[in-house]
Length: 291
Image 1 (cartoon, rainbow, N blue to C red):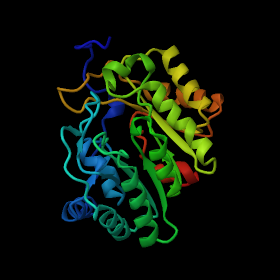
Image 2 (cartoon, one colour):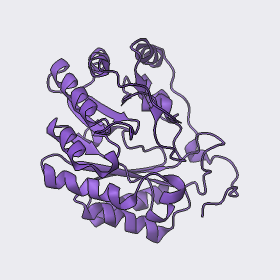
Image 3 (cartoon, rainbow, N blue to C red):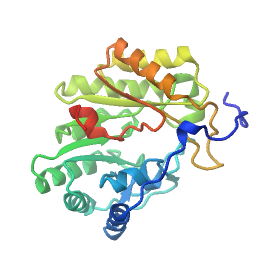
Image 4 (cartoon, one colour):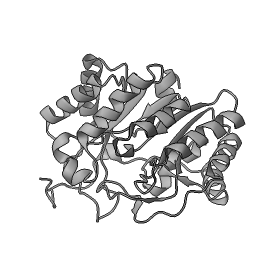
């Protein structure tokens, strides 16, 4: 069990940093609001949103801003979502073009209320981006579609450059952290990517600091590797509000470096590991190996 009141003494020095400022941040925030779009940066209260907006990047959140699941680490609102906005893919593409993006990350809330889980909307967004921005690279961070293979096939048929699905945590903590998800179902999704289209790389991510043990992290990394996934992100869990799961441990940067080396030794080809790493943070650099 995760302790309800773990003993800790505030945020450590390595998790404190200056917030970027300047006109670029306000321009991106204003643009997203004007186009009635959502970003995971804002909805999930991501600690990197100031930096990313200032660098004219964002991770688009499609299918609305209300999720059908209640993951206890996530700040996105849970409830009954509204109807799917058929014009959203076009607006995402238009915004990405105005931001001069060459690498676009698209994710979504989980829509268990939809027959295909929103897979068709992902495909439509990928298509709109490719029509609007010639040569654009698109990474999608998808939910588990309740294990439906046809939904995954729909997304892969749209040819994203990267198919990302996060494991988030170790098997033991799923009931507390992701009560409506299933550890083995997520592993199976990652394995199916390589089976359906080996040319599209699979990517996954985990958080540390929720009370996982070292053997459990090793096992999770090994489990993800066995699916054929070769891209991995490892970051620090940060409690978004008092109503969410508390942080059990703040992991120092040197420990994240140790986990990076372990993942590379396991066989992963590309690994980003650090306190501020998130699945879509500097995603383009991770794929291309450039800055």
